[in-house]
Image 1 (tube, one colour):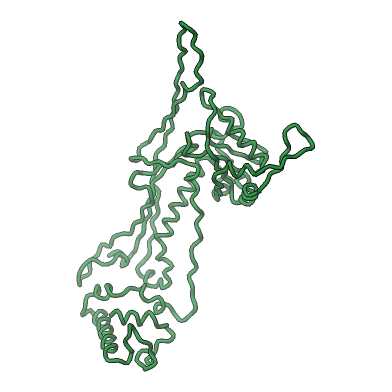
Image 2: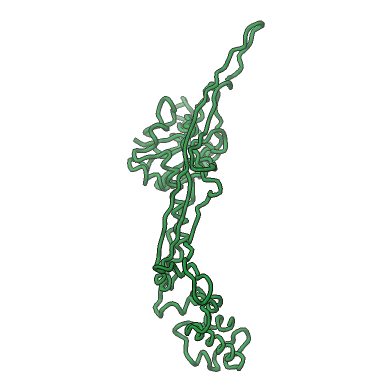
Length: 385
């Protein structure tokens, strides 16, 4: 039987004829000439198995164990020159570079707490004087994960006719949709249709983490870095943010690359007018990752094509946002509906044979996640207008 399968895999549909099958010019299969008695006997046995299975004298699973449509990539096509184009390429996932990843136990609301206070520089305590008391404040953040999913159904006849395996990539497609969903969700945490989240990003108090009239340039990056580095905790202590993440829409990718890959920067040294300093590119050393987020102009329909962001390292201190996933279900779950039919000749049918009622084949994807904005001092938004 294996020799018969190898024979079929080596033949082209347009070249299959009696002479090539049984003539002297045929090539050998595993060392057996096609005109030898051994080869003809094995070919006859394989043909007899197919005939007995089709006529019902042998169980279908005999043939199913031996071959499937994937074993005949040429014979299941027609004579025309046909090709199946691949799927669209998926953008790399970017949210793990700016958000902390967490797991939750169930679908109930989870709480994240932050405490501030008692970290100020210690004051002098004079002899006999009382120690000053420091107050501690707290902040609370809440969110709950939700279930997202989709079902895709086909009929058995569709799979039979899918000789190019175009529909058999369905599990890969719905898995891709799950990744796209979490990427969009993470972006929507800090962006809406009007631009950067107005509560999280403010030009002045309370967060002081937004600059305006600031296209992506070296000078405006310097302003953005200075604004983040000037942030203080509740006691007035400076905050260490680690290396930054520069988040841009696709339209600013080239501009960002030009800035980051420049070898030198020309800058005016403060009050010394008429003079310039030629320095090494300091931006490259301060930006750990360039993150190109294609969802920015899609969600922010006002100025998403020109607005850029800076995010602190999510692994240092308090992150700007958190993405949570249900424990044990951190990745998308892919499912195929189990058939509800038995073959009278014996045993369960394959899942690809579909349901008992309609011969329907069903795929399903399930993904469970949620998220919340946390620390505004770990992020900055820059708008052009």
